Amino acid sequence: MSLDIHVAPPGGPQQRVTLHGRLDTHSFARLDEALAPILSAPAPPQALVLDLGGLEYISSAGIRSIFKARKALAPHGGKLLVVNPQPQIQKVFDLVKAVPLGDIFASAAEADAYLDAMQRKVLRGEDDDEN
Amino acid sequence: MLIRLIVPGERARVEDLNASLDTVLARHGVAEGIRADVRLIVEELASNAIDYGAAELPVGQHELSVNIAIQGDLLTLDFRDTGAPFDPLSADDPDLDADIDERPLGGLGLYLIRQLAEDIRYQRDGDDNRLTVTLRIPTPETAP
Image 1: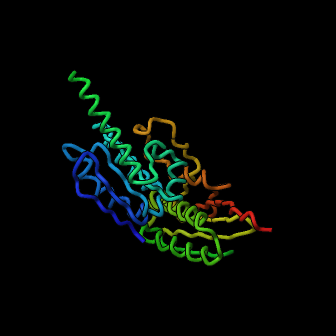
Image 2: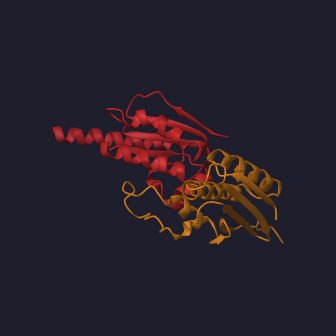
Image 3: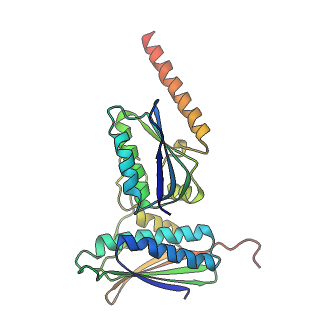
């Protein structure tokens, strides 16, 4: 099985990308290509949410793609969040400390709640500045 | 010995290799978690061998081979390639505690293998690079 990549329609401060199959040395280049326009946009998303519920396998080639995406977002203050990693994926993430634990969520709803809270904090911060 | 497979040292064939290994291991009742570890180890070793070992060989001369044997609760994976001498174990571990955005992208594959394996050894054996990787197969607690 190879890799299926579904990029949700852009809109709002978060961009969701859903992966199914295997992210490995054969497929990582396709993920890099799919993410390139998102990461190089004039206003990259504040959060890139990778939904990994359907991803069954990752190797170091896939980890490198995730690192690259994180590095591309960082200068703009963007975050990379991971949703619902399956056991093999979580194990590999843990071994190489690929994604900070606070950026991994068990469900899309949890990630949304986190992003909402982050957004409210940003808005509150802006209000404080104006006052 | 459970299985011995030989394929040309080409990226496209690594997936064939892994698909065959997975089928055989599943047939022998090896749990999915261990099969995923085997897949990862073979992919990482094959990528290394193709990246570093095959450069000076004529096209078609580079081969990868995998032997797998299971004895008791140990699975031994004997990985060989016919490339130039290259000991991947000589590389330093990546610095995992560096800032996540500053970390180098290389070295992760071998680091993963070291974490998953009970033991890993390199030797130059004739014209082959030979890596022997041992994995412990968790036995169900209900086993006698």
